[in-house]
Length: 587
Image 1 (cartoon, one colour):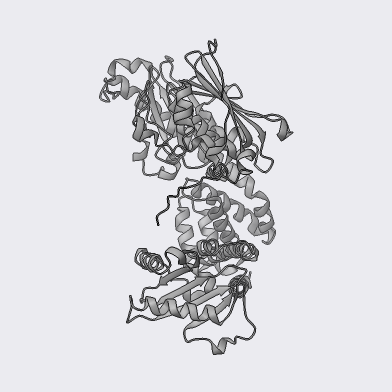
Image 2 (image 1 turned 90 degrees about the horizontal axis):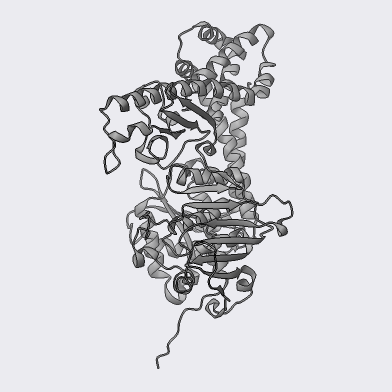
């Protein structure tokens, strides 16, 4: 006898799709992407000012195409509709490359709010409807049976466009940050000529990228340069200064020849974001929006941008040194108090040189702090004082040479090791919180530990999984635990080292107490895998909450260990604390 069945979609899907975004700002960006796809020219975002979340409203309004009744029913209401395969990868009017491709962006607002109101107008017909998250969550049956009432008003005088109102903001979510939203949107849309975004009435500009802003205009007023040197690298190949002529972007952002100067590091260049306006170059542009770079006028713009960008980069060095020194001032002062009075001036002079030498965009503040710690440690030690004193007095010594000399004496290595060990102790604290959570799943523990094998001990730190071992495990589990047995699928990690020694780890939930059945299961998994590696040695570790008291470690299978998460973390913590104590005992 054959029976027909079908999928049932529960209302909880609306919440799951809304939670697909890593922040409230990313969720709001999705609504802006929808406006882009609707061929809007302007988007107006209103963020709340009130402290009372229940009274706050977020508004995202655009002047795009709007939606007809047919579009609402057949397109908007279809979940996971593939817009590109149906209508193409370009928009109808402005031929923009479509942003929304998965058909789930409509639920972005539900990450932020419990109620989402949509008001859309097309050709003098207004349609208004609401999506209320709790009504879907409370409905455990098929969400397709949930009726949504559309209020339709004809002959409206309102222009085309769509307005989304987010009401009853989620009390557990953070209120969207104006600054973070601007930084996110300017990366995506900051250089678009026919797409303007306003947040609380203020337009999006280059300055929103963050960092320090620079503006320059030539004597004739024909070249207008506006850019920022951001606090962080601008990703996705968006860094650089782009040329804009008559409102249109010409070519891609670049560095105007600065990249050829070997003393300017790439990491610093990647913090540059901006544009130069030069409308007088219109005569040199092509139909495909290229430009005649050999023209004298273009060369004039190129030299102007290069000169001003170089000035700004040098200026940012000094600014970075001052801010870094200010941030580290308290720690430096505390460190200097360890030194005798006659050594402090030498130390201050050398620290200034350290900051100058390392503030080229290649080093993080933590790395700079490590070098400063080493510097002061070296000055404390009379054996190294003479070397450090000469370095401080020398006017042309490269700071990298200073670091190399300290490295020869082991000081830099010690500092870096202590820093790494301290970071690992912080990781263990987070791991402990995860394993203390009885609701944590095997996959959560697996994800945390697969790249941190040092937790199991120094002898395992060089072991890792690779494409081959991952494929073998996936294939084995897929064949062994399919159909009715899928819910019994274990969480296994197969690692190996350079000598082809294998380690099989089975992660149990932090609520599972290990007993003989778990031991036997793990041995069975190993026996199955040995058919793939008949001549290899495979060690086993099974990890759970704790071990049944009746099991003695002396009586377990050969090359198999049952361990508790607490035991693993305790052993790792003891190793790290011993290491830090012995490396810093003489300081």
